[in-house]
Image (cartoon, rainbow, N blue to C red):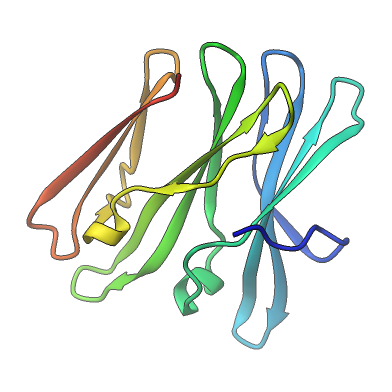
Length: 169
């Protein structure tokens, strides 16, 4: 689901990346201050050309909208594929906390920006809907010059190990 565009509200930067063609990407999240601390909302990405001019703005509504996801900023990172035609955008969606283990329950959601036309794809979730969540200490490993990402996790109780490999071409 696409969300409204950025209009100069409070914004926390989550990550940034320079593409092989020199384009610059910045992602983060809108937030509002409250008595309980910042309340995070829509995820926003900015795409600048090599001269620093804004090429495109991307806005994505987080799939999870609960007290945990609103109370913590969504972790995000970018990785460019080896063909240099896509910038993959990873977002770690927060579902909750496993109270017995004190573990944040999060899963990856993956989309990409097509560098030839500056369009953003739909995002695909891995793990969360099946009851598997990322390991908070070692959530992922980038391999083969970041063309493969392996996510590590387990079920909510931590008894069944889970991993997912994503090929970025």
